[in-house]
Length: 189
Image (cartoon, rainbow, N blue to C red; front, side):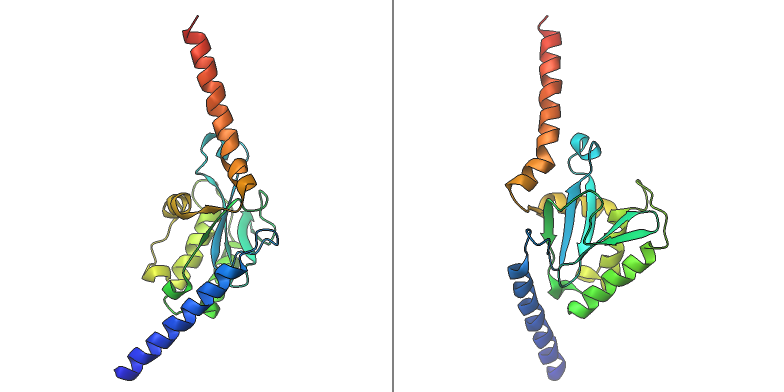
């Protein structure tokens, strides 16, 4: 029992070391986000609903994998441009800890989605990321889904830069500004 506890502590220490190394290796200029979920806006759709966008998941080395269309999972070439937000996950919360478990789950989810039809509402890029998290049993859970991920990326996601923030929110704010201006102009007549 004591030996098992010592082994678990060693695994946790190694995972935390990997986590800190990964956080130091996040490099938006190079497009590297190890152990992260990345997000970018979808033109028009994100302008109307800025919490809805395109999502991918990165390997332990930061390579982005995203379900970009029917039967296609891209690598380091997100369907709607470079990430504007990222959410770094904690490698120590992978059920079978370690970067190998993480990478295996990302790979297996990507291979599965290479055989699926893309559906904007039901089986999409968020579903691909959810499958990877379910396969690795992130936070000891197999109930990850696109709605949960959408909300959590909105809450926990960090913008990659000021430009990323503007790319995400400026079209929506301009649209709201136009709507308010038109509404005031019509009501003040």
